[in-house]
Image (cartoon, helix red, strand yellow):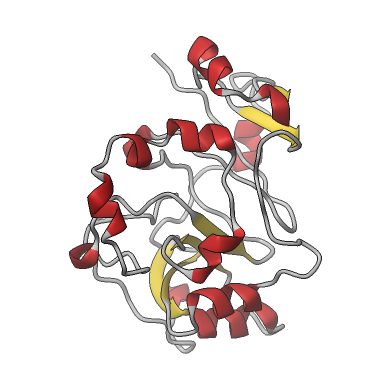
Length: 229
C-alpha cells in the first residue's frame, strides 16, 4: 500500500485532539461510483482458481499479468490464526503495545503515527471521531510471524529469500521498519487492520510488485485498474 515506505520519513504523532478535518490533502474531486459504472471500465477481468491450481508451474507458464482470486484456499499451503478468536488485541500482544504503527486518516489520506496500544483502544471503542486505517504493520521478526505461513507459491517467488544475501537477513533482530536498523527489504508480511468505512486511494505498490491478500475477518473491496499502453 501507499504508506509502506522504507525511507526515513517525518510523520505526526497521534493526538486525539488533532484537527485533521481542517486539512484537504488527498480530497477526491471525482466520483468513484461514476467511474466504476463507466463503459470504459470492464470489471470482469479476474481469473478464479482453486488453491491447488495456483502453482509455480502455472505462473511460469502464464505469468501474473491478471488478477487472481482464490475462493477455496485448500492446497495453497497457507496457515492463518483462528478467525473466530483472533483479534486486534492479539496483534497488540504479539507485536507489543509500544510498537509504533503508521496510521492513515481516511478522509484526508494523511499519515500519522500511533502506538499499537492506542490503536487497539481506538479499534475496540465505539466513539470514532476519525476513520483510521493501519496498512503498513510489517510483522516479520515479531512473535506474530510464528502464526502465519504464506502460500507456498509466494515463498517460491520471493526475491528477498531467493536473491538477497541470506546472512544479512539472518542478522536482522529489529522487528520495526526503522531504516537504520534494517539489514534487508523488510516487506514480506503485513497485517492490515481497518474499521468500517476505511478507504485507501488508488496507487501502485512499491516497485510495481505483485502482492497477495488474505481476508481473515470482515470484508474488503478492491478496485483494480488494468494498466494502459
